[in-house]
Image 1 (cartoon, rainbow, N blue to C red):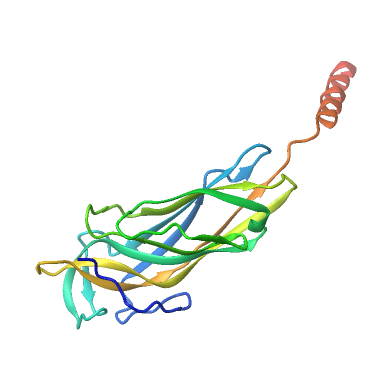
Image 2 (cartoon, rainbow, N blue to C red; image 1 turned 120 degrees about the vertical axis):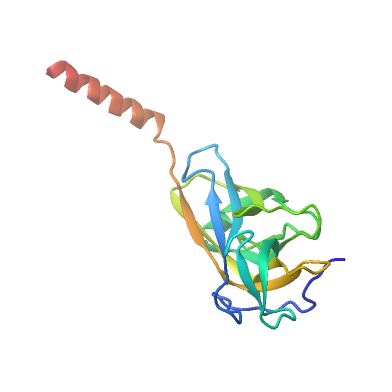
Length: 207
């Protein structure tokens, strides 16, 4: 049996929960801090949470009334990847999610990706941080520019807690988005590079 919220609702960052003590964070990571001609960018979105696995937390959402439980793992996350700057100048490919129980890699739109959902119930991934979504972004050209993306939580990240019941329970945690960017830097033209090297050689000869 998969437990999920039946109503999908938009909430702003940060997303508040009742206790205010448990927090989850999205992280955007890039394979390259600087993208050179011919290269593509691998973009990974991961999540971390505190208290960590086996830590103590209060179940006060999704039916909880303040019972004390222990953190098991991330249950699910729903988010958009938003184009802040110049991400529309590239194309996404090879989307993948870490968890396959009810995950969806999203829909590319306007330089971002909408409606990414990543969740698990069986074959549990206990990592913290845990990677959620990954894709390749390839620029249409290598004109110098900065590309900036941010996450946009559609609803708070749910964390599984154990309370000694037959099944774990879900708890919605205060969720914080992330924003990150990288540079596209073209290689200098061959003629200009040759001129630079020639000029350096001439200076060495004069010394």
